[in-house]
Length: 153
Image 1 (tube, rainbow, N blue to C red):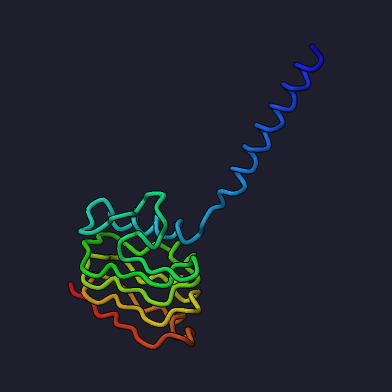
Image 2: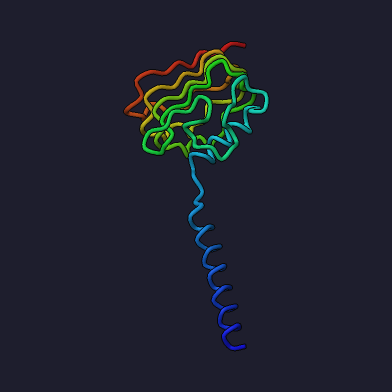
C-alpha cells in the first residue's frame, strides 16, 4: 500500500512538472503577436493571400512574411486586400527591416510606433487611404533608406 501511495505521488509530481515545462517552453512570441494584431486590424479573413496566418505554422510559412534567425525582417502584403488600420502592435517587430503595405485599403494614421523600429530600412504605404501627418519620429530612423507614403482618396 505504501509503495502504491509513493508511486501515485511520483506520478502526480511528474505530471505537474510536465505541465509546468510545457507552459514555460511555450513562450509568447512578440513577432507572432504583432502579426496577429495586423491580421485582425486589417481584415485578414478577407485578404487575397493569407496562407499560414493565424496558425501554429512557423512564421516564415505565413504569406508575405520574411524571417531571418527566427525574427520577422520583412512584410510584403502589397495589393493583398488589407482593410482597416495599422495597429500600434507593429512596434513589437523589433527586427523588421522592410514593410510593404502598398495598394490596399488601409485607413487612419501612420502609427508613430514605427519610429521604435530601429532596423527599418524601407516603408512603402502608397495607394492606401491613410490620413494625418507623417510622424516626425520616423525621421529619427537612421537605417531608413526608402519610404513612400503617397495616398489615394
